Image 1: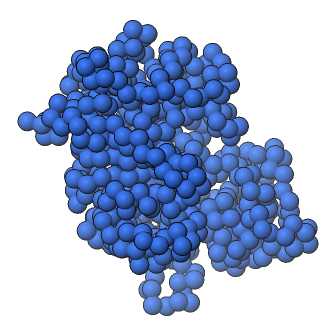
Image 2 (image 1 turned 45 degrees about the horizontal axis):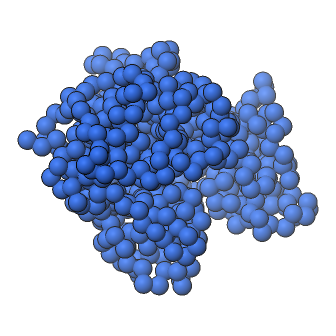
Image 3 (image 1 turned 180 degrees about the vertical axis):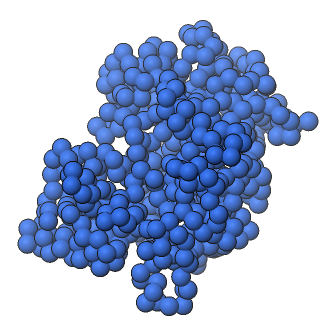
Length: 578
């Protein structure tokens, strides 16, 4: 019986050890490093990966005790894979984080370290910034060697407990609606998530997986790092910064390695379209790609369609788009679309959604579509129970009604690290009819034609004059009415001044926008008119800011709550405001 078929809970460590014994010389993981126009692949075989992780695990045992928390601040790539596996091998609690490279991430990193209080912190050899920046918050430092590979003959063979129900790692949430919080992920949770993905993505589970998703984020850690190692397929990764600099690098890697799977949120698809040229795309071959998993942020129909339009001539097939919904508290995946079908989207009547009702609009009427909300289906449950619930009455709602999404399954984690009250509120929900404890996702959605659709975050909903308004819907309107606005860099939130709640729009302008005050005020008025006309609500304020002013999470999600706090504190420094 293999680890995939058995009830092993420490499945990832066990599988890598199995591959190292059965297929020692096969490529396990490749990191693509770039120098100008050239890329240098750095590859570890299963034997070398197992040896490096086992040797590091021995050091972790010497420097700490079982259950100690070990912060991973390694560079994206081979170092990260070795560090994470070493924690699993040694029964230490990994805390996947990131190096202290910029002002924007240092504040969050310091907050996480203060919360998790690691006994040890793992750093890459070339990192000369993190240690002096973070000081004693890191605990004892353990620096990986410049070349993590070790001789298989000299390696320390780890003793892996195949049935381990202890804590595997703390996944710190991205903080889109609150301060970063550590989700307690057990070995059993991780094993369940990997088995769920294996079954849901069966069309490409024997082919390479290429990603640029950051490993400190749940989608990158599970889909980009853990899944290929557990399946025994070649994992290939490039750093997120390399993707952002030149998106063609990700697409070339997909073709070069004949990848069957990859993953990318909607903003990445949009960047791949705008950030590549016809000349760069010459010779590109995406015909082998069976699944392009889309999650981590709202799935946008226009991003899917535009990506297919641009890359269809290079072999990309529209049905490869595989939208899904998940969150760290459920160890990533909750629902996924059927890999055999094309993604499904509808326009829904905006006024009905505001009242909690779902009315699909006929796609043949272009005039009516302009007044509709375009949403993409996120599939069906991936091996767990999913309900749409009235959060006040705690009753299950029928298809066609908007409510909060609740989840139950063995992939659902047991709570937040050191936060019993928040754990009970989020993980201890019960239906009025009884039937066990549910995870409250905080996301609003509805069932339509057998699929789950997302409407927004419950805490983000803005109520003006008794009507609900979903920020993501209004943000799309702002982007569509003004090309001078950076796509994906608009945030909308409510502001209650004690008398009523008003709508506030904050939008980043592109670097090419004329900064003459008169022109900027014209732009702001155009945005206000578009929102008022489309949504029948007049914004109380429209603020235009320079690029980089709107706070985002580590995974690129808008931090509407933080943006609202900065607005109230006068810290956004607008270039124009009406």
